[in-house]
Picture 1 (cartoon, rainbow over the protein chains, first blue to last red):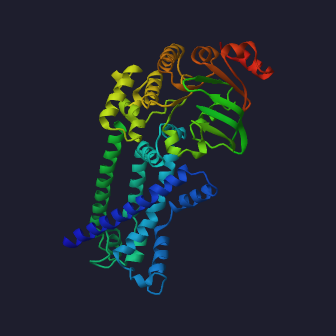
Picture 2: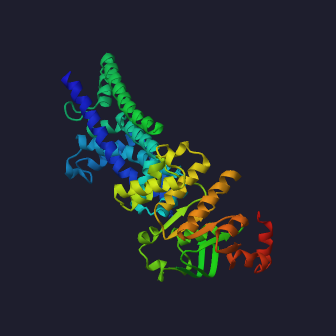
Picture 3: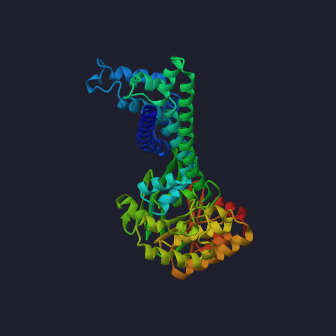
Length: 214
Length: 238
């Protein structure tokens, strides 16, 4: 029971940290892409949109090569640690948050920027109020980012190694139990993962809908 | 108060507006008329420092726009767009927006917002969300949001064009009274020559991206500068 609790806690911790880092990167970057008018903008957006469909197993492979003992970042000794899983999951979630942030801001009336500046907003104040105006789709971006990492298994398996008591998370534990033929255990862990994901999304949806009704 | 000299504005690489010389006096209401796409809104955006000229300059209070700190300059001005563009918040929060940007103390915001909501007849709607307002109510809120800032220069870009005739007439009357009452400097874009005549000290006619003529309503009606101006005035609703 304690082991399941620890696996669940680690799953939530790494996915939450990866989502927060993705948000800290994706929100400003997506805003820059949405509001900017520069050469190569469409190209960068197409890369980000492709990144939204990055296969976790490919991300896992690249991160594993980078963190491998003989790899460029091998000296950091991060392979098979929770930090490695966070790095891989951040790479998966960041394009999702960036792309959806850009889409959310592009959906606003473009004259709103001019109106806010015309009322004396500084650039920072204008961006803050645009985020506020697009808060519902931005929350959806957060939910999509979290959803993409809590449910992935390929990257966590490859860079975390599914080490008992250290890097085993719910998805990798489900794969292990299935490979052992322990379908009952695998189903129980799957149910737990589904319930957790549901509860987190329920809370975020509640916040989102509360904002919509205001 | 404002001098425009040899101004050229380009949008997407194309010449959008050319003005050789135009002066706006303090306390004056200048109405800008012209067909769609003539460059009227471009002039307001340039005056508000929201687009930069390709060449020439706008001199405000004796100082070129380029020499002003952009934020300091923009905070002397209020801009009312054709569409109210209210934020998804209550009426009073919308009216308070510009004061919030300026870091005005809460007590002062409360007092000024209350005064201007009353002045524009939206006091009873103060707690209502912007999305629940009619077109006329929303534009009243938009005007209150601009006036509450006590701007040195008020820019109004066809603020009544989307309203039905009775609402438009009432709101026009109210705006006209407000502008006359405190002698505020304003540049008002409209398609309606009757409104232009009633509201303004002078009228500027822009056609095809060029300022063609500036003068009083009488001067423009009786002596159009050229055939283009005459043809345009003939097409305008009276």
